[in-house]
Length: 81
Image (cartoon, rainbow, N blue to C red; front, side, top):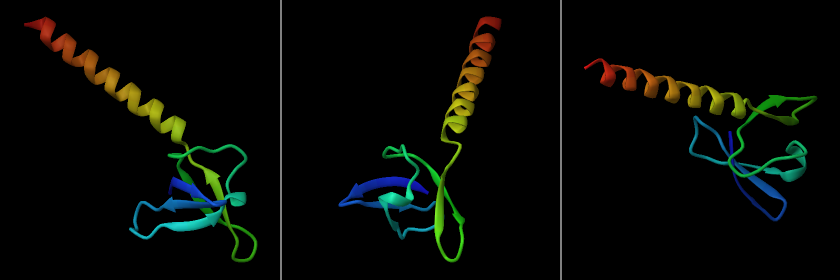
């Protein structure tokens, strides 16, 4: 789920597989967060939902590596001509 907006101590999270946003109290979020952070929900005790920070940084790093690798391969292909 992506943290899309915070208004009046309520966070709006948009799930990947649904058009319906999920509204949760800001207190259920981890200590530090910002708009655009990606979270995953885990069932806690009872029916409580616990939000855990997803591996956003790892995904960003992996995407950056992939772009750089693609760019370097393209440059090698151009230099071969």
